[in-house]
Image (tube, rainbow, N blue to C red):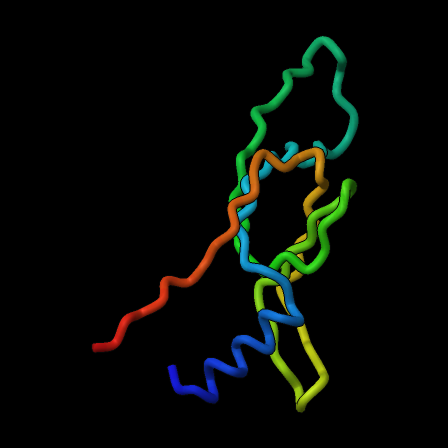
Length: 103
Protein backbone atom coordinates (compact mmCIF):
# COMPACT_ATOMS: atom_id res chain seq x y z
CA UNK A 1 0.00 0.00 0.00
CA UNK A 2 1.42 3.39 -0.92
CA UNK A 3 1.78 6.20 1.61
CA UNK A 4 -1.12 8.05 -0.05
CA UNK A 5 -3.36 4.96 0.06
CA UNK A 6 -2.36 4.35 3.70
CA UNK A 7 -3.21 7.95 4.66
CA UNK A 8 -6.58 7.69 2.89
CA UNK A 9 -7.36 4.40 4.69
CA UNK A 10 -6.47 6.01 8.03
CA UNK A 11 -8.79 8.96 7.30
CA UNK A 12 -11.62 6.53 6.55
CA UNK A 13 -10.91 4.54 9.74
CA UNK A 14 -10.80 7.70 11.87
CA UNK A 15 -14.23 8.83 10.61
CA UNK A 16 -15.84 5.48 10.03
CA UNK A 17 -15.32 3.36 13.16
CA UNK A 18 -13.35 0.28 14.02
CA UNK A 19 -13.52 -3.00 12.12
CA UNK A 20 -15.27 -5.74 14.09
CA UNK A 21 -16.78 -9.19 13.76
CA UNK A 22 -20.12 -9.60 15.52
CA UNK A 23 -21.50 -13.04 16.31
CA UNK A 24 -25.24 -12.80 16.85
CA UNK A 25 -28.43 -14.81 17.07
CA UNK A 26 -30.91 -14.29 14.26
CA UNK A 27 -34.46 -15.34 15.06
CA UNK A 28 -36.36 -17.45 12.58
CA UNK A 29 -38.28 -15.55 9.93
CA UNK A 30 -42.03 -15.27 10.54
CA UNK A 31 -44.16 -17.96 8.94
CA UNK A 32 -46.86 -16.74 6.59
CA UNK A 33 -50.48 -17.36 7.47
CA UNK A 34 -52.19 -18.94 10.45
CA UNK A 35 -51.28 -22.28 12.02
CA UNK A 36 -52.95 -24.37 14.67
CA UNK A 37 -51.34 -24.03 18.12
CA UNK A 38 -51.10 -27.82 18.50
CA UNK A 39 -49.01 -28.01 15.30
CA UNK A 40 -46.54 -25.29 16.35
CA UNK A 41 -42.90 -26.36 16.76
CA UNK A 42 -40.25 -23.80 17.74
CA UNK A 43 -37.54 -23.50 15.12
CA UNK A 44 -33.80 -23.50 15.59
CA UNK A 45 -32.06 -20.18 15.98
CA UNK A 46 -29.36 -19.20 13.53
CA UNK A 47 -25.93 -18.01 14.64
CA UNK A 48 -24.70 -15.34 12.24
CA UNK A 49 -21.30 -13.71 11.81
CA UNK A 50 -21.19 -10.20 10.37
CA UNK A 51 -18.01 -8.23 9.69
CA UNK A 52 -17.76 -4.51 9.01
CA UNK A 53 -17.11 -1.07 10.45
CA UNK A 54 -18.98 -0.42 13.70
CA UNK A 55 -20.60 2.93 12.95
CA UNK A 56 -23.10 2.98 15.83
CA UNK A 57 -22.96 1.21 19.18
CA UNK A 58 -25.39 1.64 22.06
CA UNK A 59 -27.48 -0.47 24.45
CA UNK A 60 -30.22 -0.99 21.84
CA UNK A 61 -28.46 -1.60 18.52
CA UNK A 62 -25.10 -2.27 16.89
CA UNK A 63 -24.80 -0.95 13.32
CA UNK A 64 -22.20 -2.21 10.84
CA UNK A 65 -21.33 -0.83 7.42
CA UNK A 66 -19.63 -3.15 4.98
CA UNK A 67 -18.07 -0.48 2.77
CA UNK A 68 -17.08 3.18 2.97
CA UNK A 69 -15.84 5.69 0.44
CA UNK A 70 -14.44 9.18 0.90
CA UNK A 71 -15.92 11.68 -1.54
CA UNK A 72 -13.64 14.67 -1.78
CA UNK A 73 -12.10 15.77 1.49
CA UNK A 74 -15.17 15.66 3.72
CA UNK A 75 -17.91 13.47 2.26
CA UNK A 76 -18.25 9.89 3.51
CA UNK A 77 -20.55 7.40 1.75
CA UNK A 78 -21.46 3.99 3.19
CA UNK A 79 -23.15 0.84 1.94
CA UNK A 80 -23.97 -2.63 3.23
CA UNK A 81 -25.58 -1.31 6.43
CA UNK A 82 -26.82 -3.93 8.90
CA UNK A 83 -28.58 -3.20 12.21
CA UNK A 84 -28.22 -5.88 14.89
CA UNK A 85 -30.36 -5.71 18.05
CA UNK A 86 -27.94 -5.47 21.00
CA UNK A 87 -29.76 -8.23 22.89
CA UNK A 88 -29.03 -10.64 20.04
CA UNK A 89 -25.26 -10.11 20.19
CA UNK A 90 -23.27 -13.09 21.46
CA UNK A 91 -19.85 -11.44 21.15
CA UNK A 92 -17.93 -8.68 19.40
CA UNK A 93 -14.31 -9.12 18.32
CA UNK A 94 -12.23 -6.12 17.26
CA UNK A 95 -10.25 -6.89 14.10
CA UNK A 96 -6.90 -5.29 13.37
CA UNK A 97 -4.64 -5.43 10.35
CA UNK A 98 -1.24 -6.99 10.85
CA UNK A 99 1.60 -4.56 10.29
CA UNK A 100 4.01 -5.78 7.65
CA UNK A 101 7.71 -5.33 8.29
CA UNK A 102 9.67 -4.49 5.18
CA UNK A 103 13.38 -5.22 5.44
